[in-house]
Length: 295
Length: 176
Image (cartoon, rainbow over all chains, first blue to last red; front, side):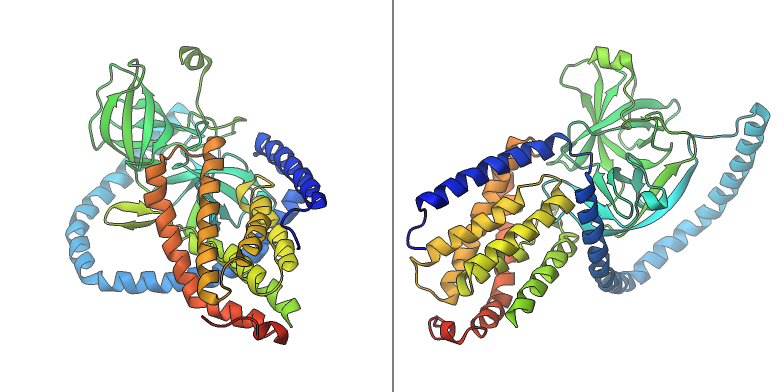
């Protein structure tokens, strides 16, 4: 290269930039859909990625095991203390469960929003540039995964499926900045309170539970779970607990900060929840027409 | 030999990146640090500096495209940035002393520029609303430090890998 930019190069560069802007704006518009070539690339990269992620998970698993071995003594003492409590709770749960079933039979209600078919999946990659909180799982449409399904760990809800290909699926975590990301949720208490998980406070690292009725009293420490009313998520997936209750920016409804129950840092095995009740098309946003008019 | 070695190394680095991404964000003393592994582009910069620009451009375009399709779902972002960074690297390397230390510093400087460019882009399309201070403290410095470590460990391996491929080139570069 005698010169950094000769005339020919300059024209090439310009054409390149124009092409680039066109491509970016085209793909930005419909990010939810994947075209066939994109799908093929995703499949191929996903296959390669799972080859690499398996030994990585093995190694981190070994370290986790060592880590938990170190804490075993302390944990054991704590767990023993909880065990006595547990027996009582267990008895109560079986009692309540059978009672619940009897009552359901009495009413003739067979299906429940709570029931779902768990699809086990392994995280094969996390979006390495981390501008968007996305993970990629090794299960896809071949295994029954559909768009917008809830994804959770043992701790609680972590996100929902945004893109599926036959053998991989992309999950957008609830900690995303995406303003269109909503999960219909409810606060457990004597009366269930309904709201929407909308947005994430990156500095506090807490989710925002919005659109709660102004007259409702909420306490710190109340548990927030998915309500299942959005049409896709099953009911009762733990989301987190309330840490602070304030008034939203318009002063019309309440806003609560919810500390997520799941740990987002080292995700490995997750469960995709395939709800047994028929699903409604669309996102799990739980917006009714009335609400839309209000906002 | 390098015909097969370079694509294999690229492929391995491409697949290893998201695995290191699984460790991030690191939480130290209650604050979160995002460490973004940029193994592939650093390798490509070294490829530009110590081997050949055209190869680096080609691999940059190819793997940038894979990256875009698989992770970002915005086609044209990394597939532009990777070759662009290699071009700029080639341009600047002619003006500075050509050794391993200067190459490492140049690569890190370009990485910094790339991170800032990405931050501006994602802010433009509204995927992030992090203020510049947060971006500096929780993303840029941790990322740079981690990638400097990586280059410090593997930079000389890359360099010797490329330099030994071409005996004429070996005499051109001193170690320091």
